[in-house]
Length: 107
Image: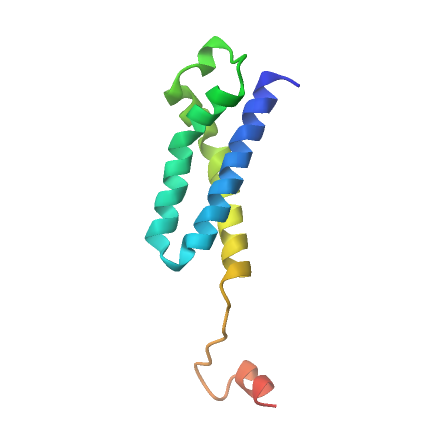
């Protein structure tokens, strides 16, 4: 497997992990955002620790952060929304007793 593919897989895994953690912590939105942001800034350290044969241009943390932004963001956002909708119970809110949902649940 090429080094670029390994780097991409680590970025996507970190984004998914950050999304799951943020989704679980989403009862307090600020805590979820902070957890995602911290994992984003830890991503270059994890990449350097897991992939030993990085090319010269990917040795810098700033370059890795720049290259990993969109992949991490998309995976983080997807898994945050997914876990948020699975973990937190969603209760419908009836704004009017004339609504179709209100009438359907009343029986």
